[in-house]
Amino acid sequence: MELLPVLVLNGLVWGLIVALIALGLSIIFGLLDFINVAHGDFFMVGAVLAWVLIDTTGNFWIAFAIVPVIGLIAGSLIERGVLRPVENSASLSIVASFGLSLILQEGVRATYGATPKRILDPIGVTFPMFGINYEFYRLFAAGVSVIAIGGFFLFLHRTKFGTWMRAVRQDREIAVAMGVPSDRIFMVTFGLGTALAMLGGVVAAPLTSVEFRLGLDVLPLCFIAVIIGGLGNLPGTAVAAVLLSVMEGFIMSFAEPTTARIVSLILMSVMLLMRPQGLFTKVTA
Amino acid sequence: MIRAAALLAAAFAAPLVLVDYQLVFVAEILIWGLFALSFGLVYGFGGMLSFAQALFFGMGCYGFNLATYKYSMGTWGAIGLGITAAMLFAIPTGYIATRVRQHHFLIVTVILSVLTSAVLASGHWRWIAGPYVTRSLPFVPTVAIGPWEFSFGSEIFTFYFTVVMVGIAVWLAWRLVSSPFGKALVAIRDNEHRAELIGLNVNRLRWLMFTFAAGIAGFSGTLYVLLARYTNLEFFDWTYSGKAVVAAIVGGASSLAGPFAGMAFYLVTTEHLSRYFQQFAILFGVLLLVVVRFAPDGLYVTLARWLREAMRALRTGSRAA
Image 1 (tube, helix red, strand yellow):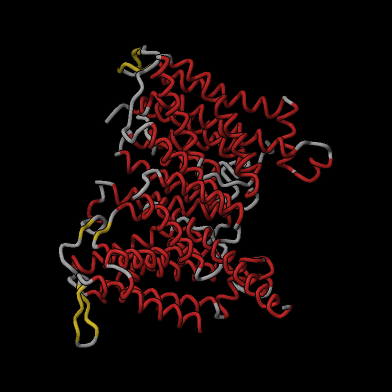
Image 2 (image 1 turned 60 degrees about the horizontal axis):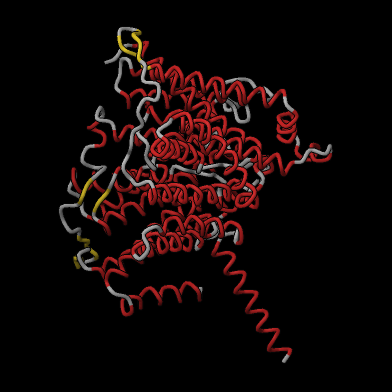
């Protein structure tokens, strides 16, 4: 049984990374009404690409800089080329993204292999905290996630493109009538969502083992965060992801990990039944 | 009627043409197709996008194992207990899930699945999972029909048994969706508000359909144990539900034949062709994207429409000549 503060802190770090991924899911979900089952796999591809880039260049920071850009480009192209015909139909979006998810998972398995691999701590500094040597990288990962989330909200509220995105979400027809290029918005939204997931993948890569099934565990967590935070409520999504993870860390300090997972899931279900509109009152984001 | 008779005739003639392992493969398609049908019932007729169907498939296996391992029941009793277990489990879970709508419904079913898998996988509650979740049957099951005793060691008997059982389930499902209850559900799916205004108890009807579909999923679970003689914790996983979702939608979720067509497409491409080409799953992913692009109503519905149009074109063509 580890110390309570360490587990809660680990929960916070992991929760911030999940928040990053869930935000990506939420903008795709909220704006395009697209249930993206492949979102967890984009996270996985981010981690795998990080491993590959570190393996070839020996430098974590190159991966850190390049992978989100790849995500942005790949996501935009996929939306434009493949997913556009099935948008606005929940069931077809599930089938299409399931196909995408198969392509990503099996593609990674065929090229990268099925064995889990690990990445060395890219900073490699530990410092004493709460009586143990805490890895500095975890704090760095949390910091990156906070900056990325903050940057994303700035983009959404302080730039023309972000305003357009919010406008299209609020009322697509009126936005189009006002001259907002909604097709381009959809493309960039999917690209941004994918970039966030892949950034999450790079940041999380040194903290877990990297394999082609990595996305399967993250996806339900992200969906739960999106719904608990309130559908379309972006700050709510981020807070819900962190809350979920911290709560699990907290329970883990006196119970075993599966019990922690079970208790937090039960709490989530109760919350969902009592407040189906989400934990937080609707904020237009 | 004619179509059903033709299907039956084809099913009974199949062992004359197919070899043993192909018979088992067809039986497998029928069983997983029945599983996909259980999703088709909740989604195609009830409008509920459920990711919990695997839970009930798993509960069917669980009930079967419980019956044969703990209570040493025969095959009929085990099938009965499997269906009962699935439906009993659906009563509370369905009650919770049907209170919410659309995306929330989907998430609640995902949460329920993850939750159940976590409980069953946990070492803490070993007594719940017991030996009933992951198990290889140590014996070849037999079934008594009248005074005769048949063994599932025979592929031909297993095939016929599966065909008859799946046929009964489909017949029940057909009776259900063409009953006033089925019509009421379709009304709810199409316009919930209006359905409520004409006096339908929306939540209770959805709950009933959820439970009935769970029984169908549990039934397919018990049939699977009889065929494959093993069960796995994996069967409870929400990704298994995902297979039913994809197969049913690809085939056409709002017809009874669609889920079978979709599951046949899924299994033939992934399981069968991957023997010849290892990375076939990638190609299957591409195929899915093609299907949603060109046959958004589902393969079965689209093919049926094409056939009808081709027939009409032929007929008018011959008349013109």
